[in-house]
Image (tube, rainbow, N blue to C red; front, side, top):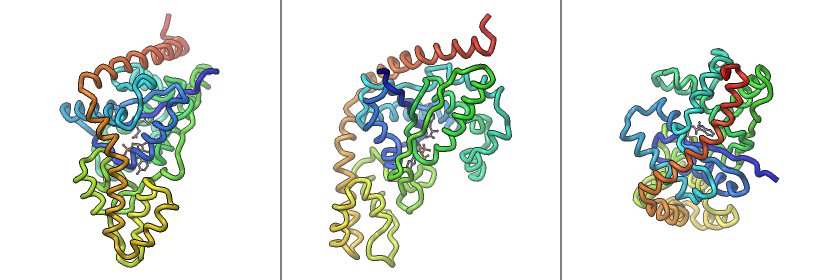
Length: 313
Ligand code: ADP
Ligand code: TRP
């Protein structure tokens, strides 16, 4: 039987945090071998907010390393850069001519960015369409993401359906996979962990950076157990084990934080080591091979699309 297809992606827009890890990377790493798997670096999405070539280059290399560091074997998954497969932007244009402005105006991500005062470039507005192309080009079945990406998957299905209705059955409609237990990993202030809120625990930070982030977790002085610490800690250790530990540390927030630091280190240290052991040349080779494999698949789909819309003579 043919394997189902799994695809996800991350923007190379800054250092990854444990929210990205538990929300997306770990679920992907746990399941990718049972699927035909694609892991993308969404560099053209990152360009909507990042206009510094040195930083972008460094981040692209960084995300590729992160993927391998968390345990994804590049021989068993296609790891690639979005910009190496021009079919993604080509298909975006075609979809742009099918969908309406009011439809895109309903997107939360765009409204959030507008509310934060970011310059509203057309790329930010069109972001969900490029993401739909990332997914639909590969006949993707399952997309593991965090809760905040749910609407983007709804957009993807609607856009795919619209094309299918207009030009005939072409795109498979994908499903998101959002693990309830890790859908929203809280940050050091108890709100959703996000690089834009400055409340992250870095995934591949040094021990010192991890200590600094954990020590900054906001603890309410009223309760006996530090809720914000516990809610992060439960990702690293079972609740059965944590119960007695937090009981023993009752009132002593520092001890709970120290235990959390130890648990984060235990999980992160081997991944950090693996991440650091890969050379730049190896990363570039992996992305080159991955890009060629992805492109082979995407160009077949595009040939079908071009034929259906009537530009192939
Ligand atoms: P950020 O909010 O830090 O900018 P991104 O928007 O780049 O993160 O998210 C990348 C991926 O990681 C998305 O699939 C998103 O759903 C997931 N993710 C981000 N933050 C969290 C979180 N706190 N909990 C669970 N998943 C998250
Ligand atoms: N929008 C996603 C994020 O911010 C990144 C992304 C781009 C993506 N294309 C994708 C995720 C395709 C899954 C599938 O995290």
